[in-house]
Length: 141
Image (cartoon, rainbow, N blue to C red; front, top):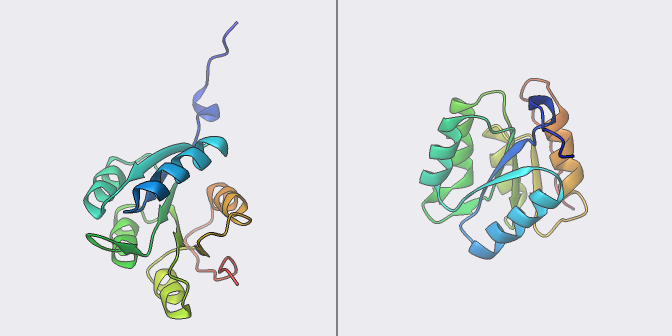
């Protein structure tokens, strides 16, 4: 007997934006394994198109993108989806990079390849229903 998935049991959709194809593939596999529905974008244009459609529970952004940067994309997404969680998962680990992302509206910033905190951070951000807040507690050491 096959169980029907009700709306409340539906997997949360996570939009991951990265211009590196290997990273996109890895994040797609990881998000599936974590129990989420990955929506993958390789450019700012694709990300904005997906964000405009709605239904995204979390945005995961890279700091550096080929068509722009994650901080500016974060601002654009924040304007489209003011209550949706945004986190950065990026190799850009300088304090100035992290602070710029948090100032743009992200709630968390992990420096690649921090796999230890990736799933717990995603789960926390998905579960939080609070208004947008800034936290640097997820910043990598």
